[in-house]
Image (cartoon, rainbow, N blue to C red; front, side, top):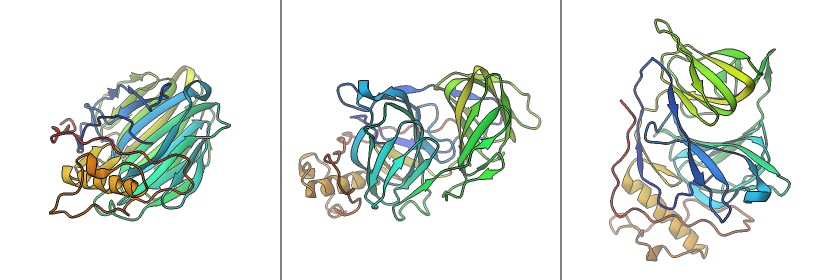
Length: 354
């Protein structure tokens, strides 16, 4: 998914503190994907209160969206650097094409993970047979050791774990006695849990991880369980994201009368500062500027736009932008997305709370 904000802010993201107490609630904000009818997404990461949960740096939650009313998802080719995209659906279907040569479909309960490395481009469109589109797109920041590596793509269908009053699927990392075979570049976990009305589950977790619980449907109460810490249940409403700092060895999740569906994400605090702007993740303002210039040069070579007219050409000391960094997907019905204009001046970064 592309960040559709026409004036994206540059965000410096750093690991948060390791407070062991309590649950922090993060409210979503609505972001239109574009167009006259504009399918909306609810964004809970990044935001001023918190930029990262482990290496998870972006979370958009959308639907159930009536495709006939909004037009669904139609995101032409756009670039990414320094991250992995994680696509997870509850209903509907999305067609994915990328410049690594992968053509795949995102379906409910199936993980599609794309690795940008130094640069990739991809497109996402809901399929003609989709009536209701409902799911989440997340980004994972890549660490210094692998962020300039090759582009790639993985598809995985995690098995359904069934208990008497809940079911789950673990798509990344280890949880509930199940381990995903999909490679991660930092310690991570990602899972969907579905709870019956009134049901509760206590999930053993890695105490070194910070965690986030996104409520898709229903409502839950969340309790961090840690030695020497009082247990306080925190109510979490639909579409809210609950943050739990490192220190808990278990998380207790209890559903209300309507049952609940949640996404649980987590990882060790990401020890590197990153700059996020539009769809690009780097380590400095200058690096992001260069990546943008490379994308603009590449799509100009494909006949879309002119990078010399928007003030983003490479500076003489850095040389001309790389016009082959990202590549373009095959068989695209629409031209690629030009990048938004850069801010006139470097913006004041936002940092994780201390």
